[in-house]
Length: 239
Image 1 (cartoon, rainbow, N blue to C red):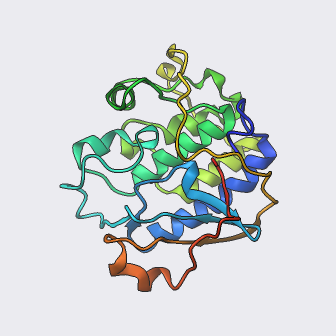
Image 2: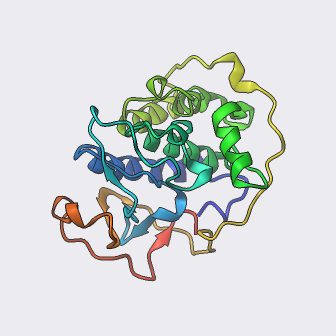
C-alpha cells in the first residue's frame, strides 16, 4: 500500500490501518513479548482484518530484564537507537511504529542512506525532518521518534490514540525545536519487502497476530494460540 502511493497514503487510509497495527502489537506487549522487527512488510490484511506477522525475532522481555539483548536485531530502517546498546524493551516497537507512520504519511522513511552503518548513525544522532509531516500530527511523530525511550509514548495503544485525537484536532503536543533540523534528501532504497499489490479492503476493527514457525518462537506458541500462516493472497502494507 505504501509503495503504490510514493507521496504518502491518504489520511483516512492511515486511520484504518493504525488501530489494527496498534492492537496487534499491544496483544504481544500485554503478554510481555516485544516484536523487535516491526515494518510494513510484516503487516497485512487478511479477510478484512489487520494482522501483524513474522514474530520470529520476538522476545519475552520483562521490565526488570532490559539489558544484555541482541544489539543487531530487526530491520535497520525501523531500528530504535537503543538497540545498538543492547538495552531495550517494548519502546523499540513504539519507535518502529513511529517510523512506519512517518513512511505512511510521506512515502519515505525518516532515515535512509547508502549503507547500514550510515542509517544506524542517523538513528543514533540525527533528528527526523518533521517539516514534511502534516502540522496537526507533528507532535505525535516527534514524541514517538524520541531518541530517549523514556520520552516516547508508554505504549503503542496510547500512540495510536494520540494520533487519532491529533487528526481530529483534539491533541496538542509540544514539538522540540530540534525536530525541524534540516535533513538530507532521502535516498530511496529498493527493499525486498516491497511488492505491488491491489488496494487493501477496509479493515474491520478486529486484530490478530500471526506467526511463522522458527527456532526462537516455539516456546510461546501456546500464548499466541493456533494461527494459520498468511496465504499468498494476504496483503502487505508495504508489499
